[in-house]
Amino acid sequence: MKILNVDQIRSLDQSTIQHEPIAPINLMERAALTFVDWFVDHFPSTTKTKIFCGLGNNGGDGLAIARLLLEREYPVDIFVVRYAPRESDDFMHNHRRLKLVTERVHYIESTTDIPAIRHHDVVIDAILGSGLSRPTEGIVSDTIKAINRAPATVISVDIASGLYTDQPNSPTDVIIEPDYTLSFQLPKLAFMLPKNEPYVGDWQLLDIRLHKRFIDLAPTPYYFTQPDEARLLLHKRKRFSNKGTFGHALLLVGSYGKIGAAVLAARACLRSGVGLLTVQVPQCGYTILQTSVPEAMCSPDRHQNVLTGTAPAGHPGNESIDPSDYSTIGIGPGIGKAPETLAMLKGLLPTLKKPIVVDADALNLLAENREALANLPKNSILTPHPKEFERLTKKWNDDYEKLTILRDFAKKYQVVVILKGAHSAVATPGGDIHFNSTGNPGLSTGGTGDVLTGILTALLAQGYDPVEAAVLGVFSHGLAGDRVAQQRGPIGMTASDVIDALRWE
Ligand SMILES: NC(=O)C1=CN([C@@H]2O[C@H](COP(=O)(O)OP(=O)(O)OC[C@H]3O[C@@H](n4cnc5c(N)ncnc54)[C@H](OP(=O)(O)O)[C@@H]3O)[C@@H](O)[C@H]2O)[C@H](O)CC1
Ligand SMILES: [K+]
Image (cartoon, rainbow, N blue to C red):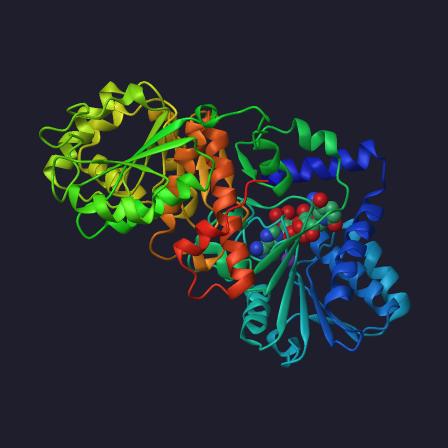
């Protein structure tokens, strides 16, 4: 699903009006009806509802919602925040219609007009929508502050009043802090960004049948992965396939005290459909790995405690890793930052010809030796969390600058970067960003990153395109986390639970 910018959203509105065709006021009515359908499903008709409206089309939506809820006999009070002398045409139209059916329209011009909001009230925020063009001030910001102070449930229409759709707010901006945002048709870029969490709440999309062809043709670098889109990426398996069909992956993982990371990555890799898996670990991890992951072959490192990429003396195999023996390599989980490991990484990268997966301390080693970044095979997948990504690049002032840095980095090094977080962002070498739609806070626990590395390594080994592997891998990882959260709650979820909950269908 695409994420469009505010100008495109405005044009989409116009395109729908022209091509359907539909009168603007009827499109507003459709939007209001869709909102009311959701509301009626979630709140009983005894719910004391206060609707705060601005003077633009977001306010117009609020007035139409008020009329439709009154028709359904909800006790509704309407408060129009009169911050300017002019209203939009569709606001005025809905204002006239509402006044015909209720006396309960109040006007807020000064703080004394702001009503008391009680515990069981539900507030509908329709003060400002995507037309926000400057920070809120005066009576608008006073009203927003009063709503934020109140103990009521708050639902924002389209977007929280005061929150920009696709540009940074300043830390001093006064913005509604809703429990829910019900947004029309497409998600807003603002919803994807961690700093905006308090201004978005639980967000959901309302399908108001905006012009599909316009959306299909609209250029955008931003996408939000939907379940049906992820499912389409899955490779179908042929009945006559054998383990050779699904590749042979090599994981370079673990160091003394962190063999668990190796076990998790290996188990996740096997649970994600790889044909064959070899895991190279320092000798201290050999018995552990052979015991806990019997399905994997284990190649002990020459070193007792850290990875060097070489075989023990007298070992019948090669002296060091031969990348051409493997479909792909996953490197990083638990490897630490020993000088011998850095030497291995620096030596290995220039010899590689196919994309690999780079995670955890492999990323930290690259951050400390940035000249080695240029040797990453094109289309490799890097999986930093924000701190690791900052080490690889630089500090950012806000989440939007972070997105710019992310896109620039992926383009410059021609790699796929998965910036992990609530909506993990997959940046492509072409400059696009796919935000993930699955996952929950339970996944912020040790080892889940190792699991993701195992998954991605398995997908690359099976021949998935790296961008598709990243989008599908992140989606399936998050979905497994959601299954665990549903079964046993998000608290206490472990990385092993996530592996067990993986499903590829
Ligand atoms: N796009 C869709 O699919 C549909 C959207 N709908 C709803 O329409 C709003 C967007 O409506 P719009 O009228 O463009 O914008 P707003 O309602 O957000 O407000 C615009 C007016 O407010 C002024 N403004 C802007 N910032 C501030 C501020 N900080 N303080 C006070 N006033 C402000 C702005 O003034 P300008 O000077 O910038 O012109 C406008 O006067 C969308 O969010 C949906 O809710 C449709 O109903 C359905 C289809
Ligand atoms: K709003």
